[in-house]
Image (cartoon, protein in one colour):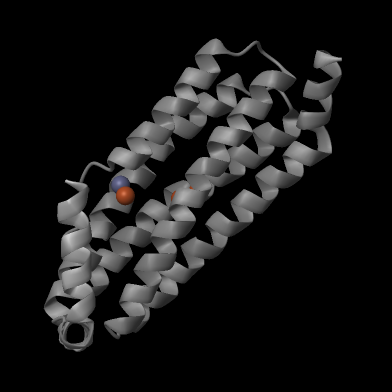
Length: 195
Ligand code: FE
Ligand code: FE
Ligand code: ZN
Ligand code: FE
């Protein structure tokens, strides 16, 4: 197995010049229809994810104790509902019917959040766990919208770029807000409990 691997490595090395230029021309000639397909696939993925979050965030609110955290989650829930609508506008702008495709990653992140909430004691410890799970969700969304915006830009979809950027900025702000809540109150209280 290892020999095979190193063989193919040295093979590709000896051909590296030809391979590289082949690769480059393949990349450059990637049809915009293929990029469009990928764009739509990822749109469906995040559309599913946002809709799942409109159901998951209320459970986080229910399990949160700190008023600051509750406020942050509730305000992001309203943003999230609006993000679903915004994605429908993106679909509309490219003449596609809005439809979702299950996002395995978001399903897993939500499952982790639920596991944390099932196993934590109410209060500061639970809040810290909710923030941790919430920030993982925001980071996934930031990655998704960053990519989607870039694809839209490459495809020349001006309207979509604007819509996706609005949501991207909200996700970044939500992440910053959760960090602030964590440093302001929750993590301090959790440390005090431990001590
Ligand atoms: Fe979102
Ligand atoms: Fe995904
Ligand atoms: Zn996904
Ligand atoms: Fe978000």
